Amino acid sequence: MAPEGMIEVERKFVPGPRTEQRLRELGASLEHQLTFRDSYYDTPELGLMRADHWLRLREGSGWEFKCPGAAAGTSGPHTEYLEVTTEPAIVARLCEVLGAVAPAEEGMAGVLGPLRLREVASFVTQRSSWKLALPGSPRGALLRVDLDTADFGYAVGEIEALVPKEAEVPAALEEILNLSNMLGVPAQEKAPAKLIVYLQRFRPQDYLQLLKALNPQTETPQEAK
Ligand code: V4E
Image (cartoon, rainbow, N blue to C red):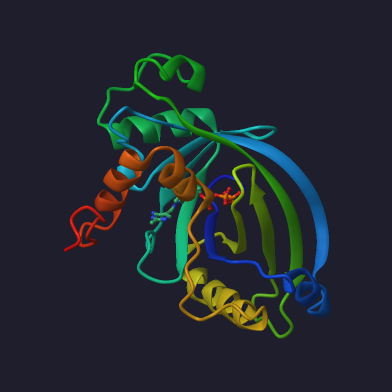
């Protein structure tokens, strides 16, 4: 998770048998290997996820709230989210999104009930986190590559850059796309997030409702002729 207020620009991809070897060839270093549980929370109507907001409790890190950035969503192969990690800031944003009056409590534990937030998904991820600097990068910044396997059997990779302001997003995006090419990721490939695959497998009705809300123009399987 990014430090408070940073913009996370990322692209997910399907890792292949040669992905790690390719990362090493490009000079990437394995930073750490972690196992953690994410528990996602939402209202019974999925009021947060339908508005493209994602609230989770990450084991070892605490509460994290991903809110859409200027180019959030799924129009391109990348996504852009602002990450909020302090509890008072998360509570304030939750109230905005859900149209609720701010409760007297500022901590998360005290607002879950009043805001009708309950766990909708929970799974464990095994993650290998790689870091590398792209040669010739004008930003001189590091890219992170996470290779994840969720306990329900789904593997996904993620190339991520953290930028402090919107003006730096295009350069970060270009670096991410360059690295994607170097890793052999097909240009238009879009791999779904672990949570989306979890909902598809274990909460199919919620998944269909969510898909419709996030991509109103998409036909759901039941509606397809
Ligand atoms: C932003 C988002 C979701 C929340 C989980 O984000 P994700 O990047 O998948 O988390 P993780 O654990 O892989 O990485 P980390 O946070 O540690 O860097 S779930 C779905 N989205 C966005 C999204 C969307 N709006 N629409 C569709 C169809 N898919 C994904």
